[in-house]
Amino acid sequence: MSEKRPIAAIILAAGKGTRMKSTRHKVLHEVGGRSMIEHLLASVEALSPVKLVTIVGESREQLHEALGDRCAFAVQEPQLGTGHAVQQAEEALAGFEGDVLVLYGDVPFVSTATMQAMVDRLNAADAPSSVVLGFEPEDPLRYGRVIAEQGQIIKMVEWKDASEEERACTLCNSGLLAAKAEDLFALLKRVSNDNAQDEYYLPDIVNIAIADGDNCAVVSTEWPNEVAGINSRAELAAAEAQWQEYKRMEAMDAGVTLRGPETVFFSWDTEIAEDVVIEPNVVFGPGVSIASGAHIKAFSHLEGATVGESAEVGPYARLRPGAVMEAGSKVGNFVEMKKATLGEGAKASHLTYLGDATVGAGANIGAGTITCNYDGYFKHQTKIGPRAFIGSNSALVAPVNIGADAIVAAGSAVTRDVADGELRMVRAEQLVKPGWADRFHDAMKKKKKAEGK
Image (tube, rainbow, N blue to C red; front, top):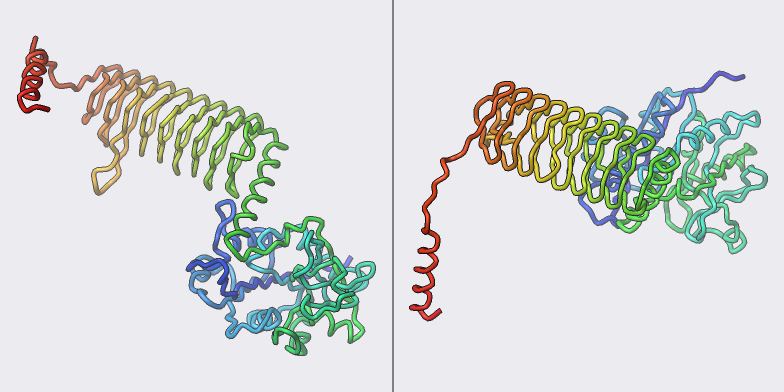
């Protein structure tokens, strides 16, 4: 077996993205809460490439900020086609001896397995000069064609330059390509722009290599959506819908019950264990983990939250970043948590805000309770001990500690610590004036009559 060759990847992201009609760079638009280019990078990084080069153009400062030092950057100006774009990576890959994958920032869902298949084919016994990723879409009309026999490429041709016979071929060029570094840039120097677009086409290196008598191969993906490009808001929405459908099926295959699958929306990193039940119209933002046996009820929104075993959420609950629900805990309708931990078996059944708080095991948070965590400048902590009972419509003004087994009477505004087992009642004295309301109503009725209203 030959020694495994190092891998480099070139990601093309210099396009203007005018069809997206956005000031945000096209490849930074999100699917499943993650930008297109981050989806792609996650797949390619799984191959442990020794070099990554992103080709940038307009709005490149956005990519510099988003990607930082995770890759090198090369600028394509002016933009004269895909072949010209790849040429811009030559300096960044100077001295590299290995296999190069050419990928597209707006084609985010190419799997690691597909990339590996391209590299494996490049290193097969017949030693192809390059490997093209092909696919067969339902509507092939606008794609370049791969004319091949038994996996060996005879010719690559762009649709605008293809004959009617060539257009009848249904094997299309995804644009993705793998080649040995020592061949790639030498071939690119020989590419011409003598075509309908006056551009330097990357696929032309295949035709040049074939003319030299070299072997070139095609690897096909059986899932055309894997190589679907995203160039407009409509295509972005279609990609989101396809991705969500895949994640729903993945969740159900893993033992999750979705009672209205088409109404549940996941993020790229949502983690859900088996035997979780999710009711309709639930949205998961990034950073959510749900343990086995949990029940997420309808119309709940979770982001950056951890839900423990057999916990209950909702309906109409909101868990914000830093929310932690331990095993058997419960939040009900119109409860919001942020940077708060609800201990084992504790519950806040309705109309409550828990922010910057720790609630002990078995505690009960009454309806309308809020932790007043912000003084206009700083956030402060509220600590509620195990088995504490917080009466309805209470305001806990942080920083404040409520002890174990303590009771806070309904309607209290608590500004000082409450000791273990203590009852705290903070209310104004109830004042009773017999007959006052009757006299008030009589006076108002007479006044209204006198004014003719």
